[in-house]
Length: 192
Image (cartoon, rainbow, N blue to C red; front, side):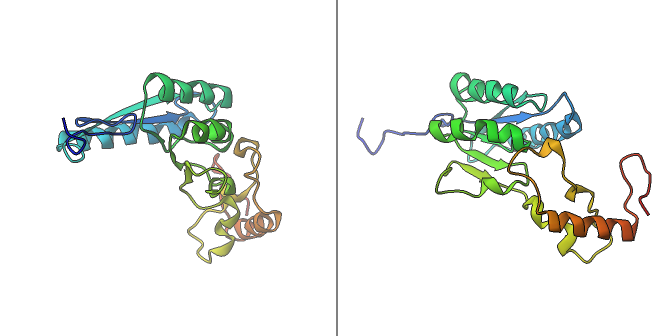
């Protein structure tokens, strides 16, 4: 067979399939976000039902990490070393993603569209295989003049993990803003 006729794909990609991994908290303190993984699964099923991507089916493999960084490391290793995925797509959580960032970059497996607002995901010089997705936590609604946008997400949380702390001046502004417009907390109690 000539060199031109030989096909060479990256790990996780063949003529018929693209393996995409995902790590999501289907259990644990952030299990409400598990719906994101279920929605992605449904979307990729729809893509496959309509012919896939250039004739290739998406094999979407998603695992539960219970929002626990040690479990995230275990699941990332399983996806990369056993399942041999092409990339890990939209894994959730700052601490969880921080726990696998060096591993993913060492293995040269894309950690694509990290679902966390920490600023550390935009460092292509040191972590070229990691790409963030959502806006930085520090740029939250203090820049927004609309009262329809909740600023509740601006308050510091231990679940954010190190490197995800917002600028204190920004979240102080968010506190003032949310007090003024009467943002409600998860229990429905207004702070106004």
